[in-house]
Image (tube, rainbow, N blue to C red):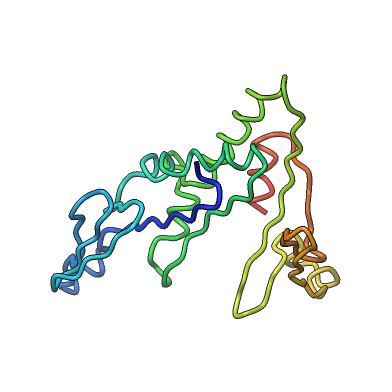
Length: 183
């Protein structure tokens, strides 16, 4: 049911101590689980609104995407927003309050384990960053020779999108995949 769907979630972080000390105040509220109201009677619709919501609540709305990926569909989860908006916290979290990425990794390997009698899964990891219109291969970042290789986005005849020269590594466990992310 998620095939070909784009879902957009909105998560509003609480004001920081500095913002509160400056006298800033909240201007957003949730009208319901899908509508964000901004001071001045402006409303925006999303597939889900979290103000701020817990890491577990955000992940629960993403959990089905893991099964879609295991079923062979392309899945992307990314965070977008200005500096300080809470993207890193939402994606990675903190010890004891893991974000979407670690929870997704655990769920992926749970799905792989549950389906291993019926399917043969291969889990490959690559990490790509778009920074100032440049593609950066995060698995070779810091290696002067390898990080100079230009990455090219290609659309195959089948319609599949690939990134030429992007490093991929096979992983067999959630811990291995987390170790790659922690590099």
